[in-house]
Amino acid sequence: MRQKLAAGNWKMNGTGAVLAELEALIQAQGAAKSELLICPPATLLSRAAEIASGSHLAIGGQDCHAASSGAHTGDLSAHMLKEAGATAVILGHSERRADHGEGSEGVAAKASAAWGAGLTAVICLGETLEEREAGETLHVIGTQLATSLPDGATGANTVIAYEPVWAIGTGKVPSLEQIAEVHDFLRAELATRFGADMAAATRLLYGGSVKPSNAAEIFATSNVDGALVGGASLKAADFAPIIQALDAS
Ligand code: 13P
Image (cartoon, rainbow, N blue to C red; front, side):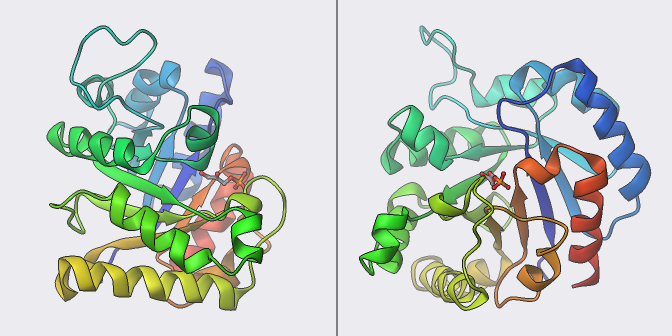
C-alpha cells in the first residue's frame, strides 16, 4: 500500500551543468515503479522542474521558512518552492540542525507551512554517534519525531527520513538490525500518536551512505520504504541502480 520512494538530496552541489544528470536519470528510470524525487539547490528548482515536467520524477526543495512572506533575507517560503515547481521539501536535515541551529519546534512550524502550500514534508531525524554510543538512540529519535511532526500529519503529506548523523557522507552504515530497530520503532510511534492507518500509509526512508552496493540489503530491511540519498544521487549512473534495487525489493 505504501509506494516506495527514492529521494535524492543534492545539498549545495550543482550548477546548471548538473541538470544533464536529471535528463539522464529520466531516460534511464522513466518507467520506475518507485516514486522518484530529486531535491536540487534552490537555484536550479525551476529548471529542474521544467526538465522533469511530464515525467515520473518529482522535484523538491531542501528547506523552507515557516512564514509565507516577509523580512527574512535569504530564505524561501513554501509557496515560493511550490511556484518554482516543487512538490515536496526536505525539513530538519541534520546539516540544517547543525549549521543553522534548527530545532524540532521550528521544523514542525516549517512542516505546517509546507502542508499549507501543498508540499509533502520530508522530515529528517537522526542520532549523533555520541548519542548512539550512550544508548540514547530511540529516546533521541522518539523526541525528534514527537516534536518535529505537527498534528495533522498523514501518509500523503509526510515522509520520515531516518538519517543517523554519523552515517551521512561517511561511508559508515548502521547494521541492518540497527536500521530495523529504528524503523520498527518509528512505525510504532506513528501508530500510537496518529493511528494504525496513518502509520501504515507513511513512508519511512533510510538515509546515510546509501550506495548501489548496499541498497538492496537496506531495502530488504524491516519497515524501510526507500532512501534519502546524498552523494550517490548526484550522478544518474549511481542513482539508477539504487532505484532499480528499490523497484526489485
Ligand atoms: P549521503 O548519502 O551522501 O551519506 O547523504 C545522506 C543525506 O544526508 C541525505 O539527505
